[in-house]
Amino acid sequence: MRCLKQKRNLHEPPTLLWPPGKKGKASEREKDCMTVANMWFSLLVVVLNLLLVHGKKAPLPHTKCERTFEKVGCFKDNTKKGMRTLPNLLVNDRDKNSDAHDGHKINWHEWEESMLSLACRCANATREKGWKVFGLQFYGECWSGENGETAFNKYGEADPKKCIQELVDPMPPCDKNKDMECVGVQSTNYLYRLKDCKCILLTLFE
Image 1 (cartoon, rainbow, N blue to C red):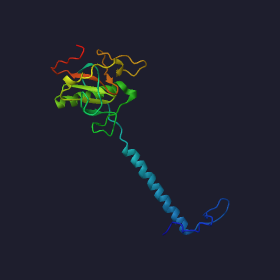
Image 2 (tube, helix red, strand yellow):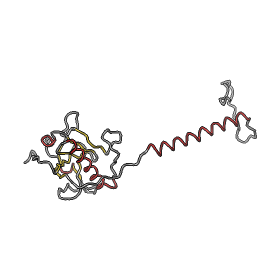
Image 3 (cartoon, helix red, strand yellow):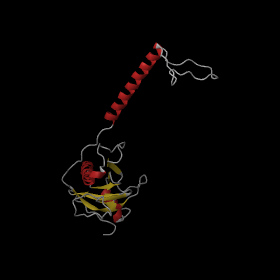
Image 4 (tube, one colour):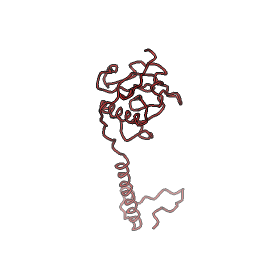
């Protein structure tokens, strides 16, 4: 069955199947063609709905843990290739296409829970590597490295306003004694040390 219209003379006006205001009856071939077209359209709608439902996975629930890490401070970083103080991206809650994305996602409406979840997973990943410190950066990234305990302060301390703890206006500086995690903005690490680390961390200003 052919449902394509035959070529017409370009100098002739197109022929409508049912011109407005004109009574007419569609041929059997035309009816069959429209039935097939409707079937394909319905199938396309079903497929698109399935892709939307199954292709968009819900983020994993927030991770909770006992804090086996402690706050150190806010430090500058350099995001140019090969220049980072903590060169290894272990967890990425910002970019679902990142190799470091594990299914969790930042929830800006559950900020405190999101940051604790990120810190818990970051601490676990750092400990598994045998490393001693990690930094939370750009609201949802976890960075660490083999020599992090000596390299973290390479560029010095950052402006305290570059690290945040609460999403309020105005944002207060990070309080080390408060049971809430701090995180750096872009190109800034809020540094943590694992509690079982025996290392002594010296800043440039100590």
